[in-house]
Length: 263
Image 1 (cartoon, rainbow, N blue to C red):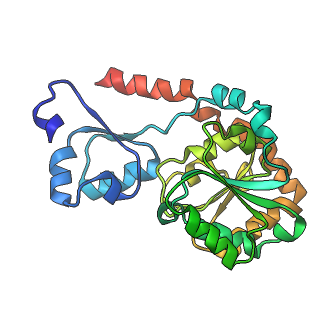
Image 2 (cartoon, rainbow, N blue to C red; image 1 turned 45 degrees about the vertical axis):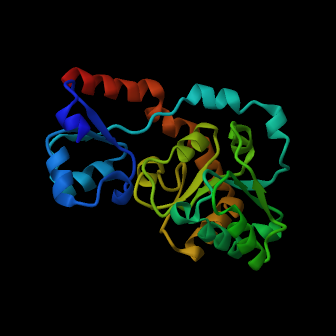
């Protein structure tokens, strides 16, 4: 409302999440009135198409989140952080919030996989409101000795680079940078097909695995595949870095410049 009536310069509204309760107000008519003819950018194609249809937006386009690949790879060389966790392990890194990240699904799938019995641990790296609850849940599943909880690090990248693969189990996303960051370090990814973003980053069985959401069995089998199907894992690892070049700062900056030139 402030930008509509007070700002005299053009304003670009960026939609960062597929979850409308986070992104927009509760009144459909008000959202349509406010944004119908405004310049808007969705950080994923799913976001753009969903809200364009929902609110009748006339001027919305997609510009993905950008990744500073050079900086991520430089920070990953910190050996002091690299040596804080013994391998082999797989990793989740991000906010410890089960409401959005669905980390209980991750713990259940890990429990049902063959990773624990093969000495491969699960590293959960991050901070958030549900840390204690998830530690208790790991105890209930009798996997607390195989799950490592480590507080958020300013620089998680050495541990991501060292991991066998990264896992994402979110209920919803916008355009998850953790997948881009992992792939840029040559670490393959497994993600549930949540809205939105993973299906625009992962080329199934080429740089990672895209799995049906809320399916414990499918997720645990995907974990097993990356451990026991050496050819599949090697393919995804070899393709990981190259698959995210399109999301580099330089490439995404060109799209922003094009949009600014139009305005």
